[in-house]
Length: 190
Image: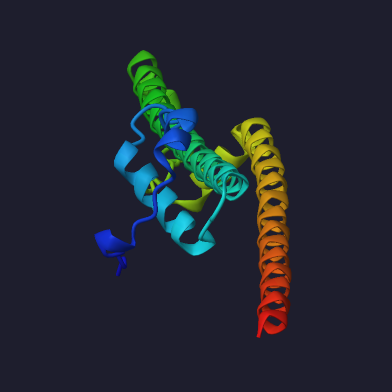
């Protein structure tokens, strides 16, 4: 079950940064509201407090979005190739049947050898694993290219996530140092 954040917990970048970020990088049927919700979830978890933090959140969201897009494209290619393999198989069955019927009508006596008829192919259902295998074989170049892009995007996203962690630690350290200075000044004033 999908957990939705309460509207009061949504985190949006400051208006000036929203203008810099512009429209979400969407294509095709990708829905802006899904992107915005995803952005808000990541921003909520990352809790950016400055411009650098927001830029890192934007990069992490966009790279994650690209990864998901590539995975959808990969699945679409595989499904398309699987469907094509099944349609080609169906066509081959129809063609074989037509060829048998044509041979039978041209010379019916030659079609039976020793009283036996020519064996009929066994039909396969569309969900037969052979068609998925054919899809992977036929689409291997595209699938491999997508897998390389996904790996590249994941490396970049992981680097951004590490940078977010370093940035957060740096902010914490600066805040702690500033508090120690204030504590020292307050103690001296007493």
